[in-house]
Image (cartoon, rainbow, N blue to C red; front, side, top):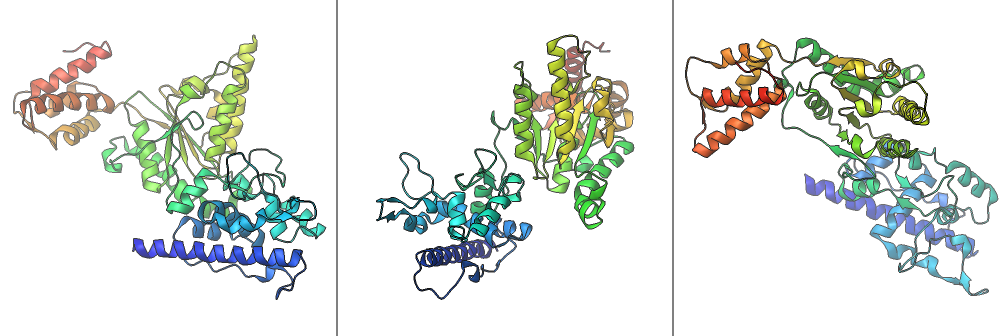
Length: 450
């Protein structure tokens, strides 16, 4: 099956290249007033989309691109897959012994070949001599055009001029070449890390009320396109969805966010606030802007863990620092409002979050510490189903009843027990070892262990 898909991707690109070569040949022929069977390049019909598979075909289908848009897409891709196709634009104007300025092209030192610009695309579609075509082309290509808005093409400067290099974004190039979804790597430019899990919904042991709220969030992610666009509710509902998770550490907030992504086949990114929040005026807003710009129109889930550092209550504006902090909050409010994906904020205490944020959450989910029933299930899943447990007076049921631990603390106990079992060379855990692990966790929190 994979070979068939790869062949379709290759065939689609080869057909697209042949179409572009025919357009370039025709545009040059018409421009130099040589004989041609065509009176316009638009008589050259774009090739059909062969398959729903593959990044290139998916882009064509998703946006239903017109003639000019398809030219822009293949022209931006061509330096990567068939650069010699553009060598014809390297010819010089013999009358003045220089390049044809109407061909456009980007010049870089230590770079060979012709790098197309928007001017090149404008020339190809007939905008060299036809002023109406040129003006229409210039009017259509701006930052709000989906090619730039959805970061299919990359622009260095805005507003966009015809001298702008025609360049695919890193994401688009990756998707077209590999046919796979692009997941950005963690960096200072994108301070968020993709998080996944091997666990499933049944592994998340929480109260039924919490599960119901999480199901509601999942259903929004799965059905938002139907609700907003097919039912035309986008007139009154914004596309994004904002959720607050609050509760003690280790109660399942991060796992819940990750499972939402797994259930909806949506990438989840945990945002590193330490790389976003800056003491320098304007830097925090700049960092947040870069993050949201990268995530725009991707339907990603952004998970702000331990969000108090940025989303805490605003203060009275008695100093310039207070005013600066409030500006950061106001900016963040606006970006979250405009974001079209799911944003999840996680905090230990709901009371830490600014009321202006709370009003904007569609759902707030309280993750309480597990009670006896949940603790018993957790111990059974994490230890009882894995290890042979020494029989004794103290049982797993007794431990679940007498020792209040979060799921995260229980995981630490399991790790401690696993290390001890591995050292002994057998998959067996004594209740004494479990108790020692629990005592370690109690000591961390300065709780009395009996």
